[in-house]
Length: 170
Length: 184
Image (cartoon, rainbow over all chains, first blue to last red; front, side, top):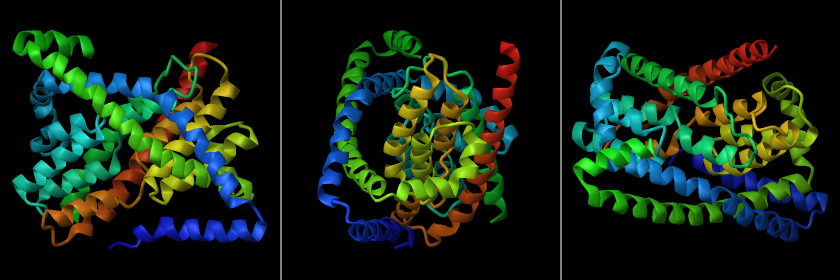
């Protein structure tokens, strides 16, 4: 048990107390806010299906493995263990997919190995860029995303490089 | 991406292509139902935070940061951005998306164009670099797989995240300047 599991419940308790003090109708306000969730889900659903199909096809076609093989030499130059190439490719696309890979790494190399620690830090310091960008921009009229995706990708790659270097020290 | 995958599948295993698409479809349906539950809870809580005036307080607290990161915005937008950033920092991953989406909605009203604004990109990039500081899921997972020092990844994660998020913010600001100059 880490401290962080307490953060959310404690904050919610404080919030409810504060509402009582301010005499806000907590029940009605909460229900009214929750109503918005349905519209939100309807809005993001079509984009979710599309990106999921694209990712699944990319995986099923084996293009993921091919890309991983192609990028492996580059990883060596950047100081990232080549065993992690697949994880780094899947990570921006799929949260559940990368979790599966992470578990695979834990079983193959042991959860305390250098590779497993690198993989953990990579997972923790990056996010599913394409998924985040898809649903966030689904709320807007914006069609031209300019530099959004490249910048996020660069930042995540840098995070991975730093992750592997820092793991060597700690 | 879809096209290249389909073409490859045509050569390797044509049956798989339709299977993969169907699986992905039902995966998305499952996910959206899960999300619906999560969003209900968080949007309800956000409504509460809003109603008792807390969100304005958080917003005014984070005001200088938001001004610097996102440029000129309205008080409403600031409110949601502030909630999104604080949810991110506290590691309440599930609360980030609903607040972020609301903020995007507000930013879209301000932007009113088919080209993404700097503030939109900034918000997406900050969320996509995962400014969550303590990776609880991963620590739990490592414990399950027999790690004896499962939380020794916290410090490296914080270092990697901080550097990459700062870099991302800098890059967004930098790219924004280049694009502005190109327009002129």
